[in-house]
Structure formats: C-alpha cells, structure tokens
Image (tube, rainbow, N blue to C red; front, top):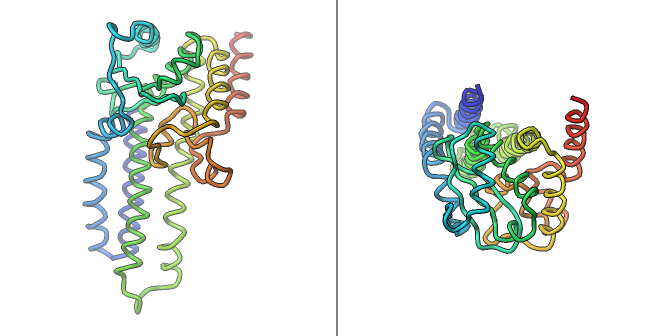
Length: 280
C-alpha cells in the first residue's frame, strides 16, 4: 500500500509538470515536459541516493568499524521487519541524520559524527527508528521526486518567460509562469515533507515503544543545529534530514527553507503518543 501511494504521488506530480508544460507551449510543451520529467524521475529513482551520499562525503561503515551503531540499527530493523540498510557516517560536527534509497533493498541511513558524539544510545535509537520509518513508508523516494519536480517547474517557468511569445501571452499565464506555479510546486514539496516528518516521528515512537527517546534527541539536535550549518548543505536536500539543516540561518532564510514542522510541534505530538501508549 505504501509503495502504491508513493507511485501515485510521483505520477500526480509528473502530470502537474506536464500540464504546466502544455500551459507554456501547448502540445509540444507537454511533450517536452514529459521527456524532462521522465529523465528526471529515472535519475532520481536510480541515482539520487548515490549523489546525496557523495555530496556529503558519507563514509560507509559496518559491524567491524561501527559495532555500536550497527547493533542499534540491526535490532530496530528486526523490530520493523526491514532488511538491514547500508550505514554511513558523515564527517561533520553538526548533529543530523537522513535516510535515502529507492526501496527497502537499496536503502541507506547516514548520521553525522556530531550526532554520534552528542546523543546517548537511547536517543540514537530514536533517531534511527525515525529514519527507518521513512524507509518503511518510501518517504525518501517521494521526497526526492517532489523536490525534483518542484525544481523542474521553476526551470520550465524561467524557460517559458525567456523563450515564450510575448505577443500571444495572456497576462494571467504570465503571472502563473512567474509566480503561481513555481510557488505552488514548492508548497506541495514542503507540505509532503512536513506531513511525512510527523508520520516518521509517530513510526519511531511505536517502533521503540519510547517516544521520549526521540523527544530528547530532537531537542538536543535542534539546539545544536542552531549553532552551525552542515557542510555543503543545500535547500534541495534539506527535507531529507531529521532536523532542518538551515536552523542556524537567519529567520527569513530559515522560513524560506523550512521543510520540517517546528521541533516544538513534533515534541508535543510525541507527548500525545506517549500518553496513549501508557493508557494502552
């Protein structure tokens, strides 16, 4: 069911992109948009995980050189009924983590050195459970495709503004090209990301049976993330991290790049789950 929902969202985003191509260039614009979307989705599906891991200089580890982390992940994957993902450590002092990969068999979890140094074993388990919940619901794939399509719509809008025929252009279409469609695409991307963060938090709480582990971890991660930005951080990958990597950036920039609910909201929802688990 989760895979079906993921592919449905991918298809819907692609159709929006193709429709926008038709808005700009008619039938030929739709064909052009379809070819771009097909190429981008193919690349995102098969290669986005390798690209992001390489971008952040992630180093693959295993049981021999990261036994503590490996054991935490092994126990949680058994609990979640998932295959063991590949594990990576990012050499960066800013604490953060993300999951990537197109399906269960090609999943990877990456954590920074800063996270391993900051959190205790229970808190690390809370973070890993959150990332495994993303994997279980195919969030990595849909997040990547949503970001890809949002960027493609902005690119197509710029293309239409530069190469379109001014004589035949309706003013409403011009406004759509310049503002409405790129903004709508970004809002879709951000809303998908925020809703799935809540779901991953819930999944982590149920997986560990201890929502307070993730609550403590989120509080620490948010406080430390405000002190700096992970190296080479990009807005296009911000949605993948457990906390917004741009928390240290000024208020206006932080809101512009906000792909996550506030940490306060997430902790409050986990508190509700904690009480429900106690009463069960």
